[in-house]
Length: 330
Ligand SMILES: CC(C)(COP(=O)(O)OP(=O)(O)OC[C@H]1O[C@@H](n2cnc3c(N)ncnc32)[C@H](O)[C@@H]1OP(=O)(O)O)[C@@H](O)C(=O)NCCC(=O)NCCS
Image (cartoon, rainbow, N blue to C red; front, side, top):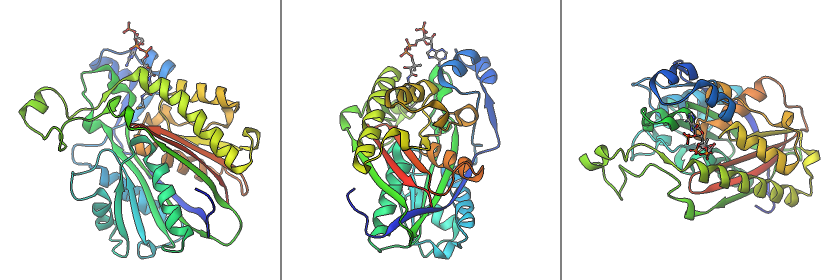
């Protein structure tokens, strides 16, 4: 991104997580894992799990409604709804169309973005282009996932994920603040390191895809760790350089929540004191598209962000997809 025409800022945030909680201690009773290992290595104590009747759109629209209310707008003010998800309700139509219907926000255009754990960051960047160019005034960006639906609950890597949704209303601003820059990247050579192979056009759903558990996620944990700790610092350093800022200028970092070890390593490489890195994975684990906006909403409503603060967003996900952005809070 070079230069925005109109200033673009976040004017409201919201989040929603299911009520049902799976603690590490519970997982210890059903999986070959240990509560202690999960907390020490991943920073997770518990995660929220959607009920059998709760789809991604059910979490998404509730988060979206809260963000609209927080922004002081009504559903009719929303011009565009972007839902970032890797666990859509259905292959067709988009989850964004289902969310639009549940919100009854019929003035809005609606579409999904597929960038897995980077989805919300990618979604905010798309929203920013529409607002900066004057095409739309108010865009609702939602990151929502229900990974519990694509977890093999017999495997130990089930411990990584939880369900949840977060949202932000993005709008224009007369003051010279808001998003300063984005840097987004994709690298399809990583396409098999985290994947849900079954149920699409490559391997349509059939007995074989079920027998071979291809409808569950498959993760190369070591590759995720190695790539995440390489590309997050790369994207962050690039966006700092783009804005002429240094890491010392950053007041808070609101990152995706893959694991505490990945965030600690990233903070160490970029030279950011870890107390400036916001986390909530102890409560929610990795909610994929939901992590960044749920955390943003928590931090925002706890009034941890002051006017003029420089906030660093960063995310990495399957694809690979990754990136970083800096906002001067207004
Ligand atoms: C998954 C990860 C913890 C595995 O660690 P690793 O050192 O690369 O590889 P290993 O699989 O050999 O695991 C090392 C030890 O950790 C322990 N371990 C790994 N996963 C575990 C789990 N879910 N529960 C309990 N212990 C686990 C085991 O003791 C294992 O030893 P073992 O081989 O004797 O069983 C690590 O690679 C990681 O954190 N990756 C990032 C994944 C991530 O963040 N995913 C979410 C975003 S997509």
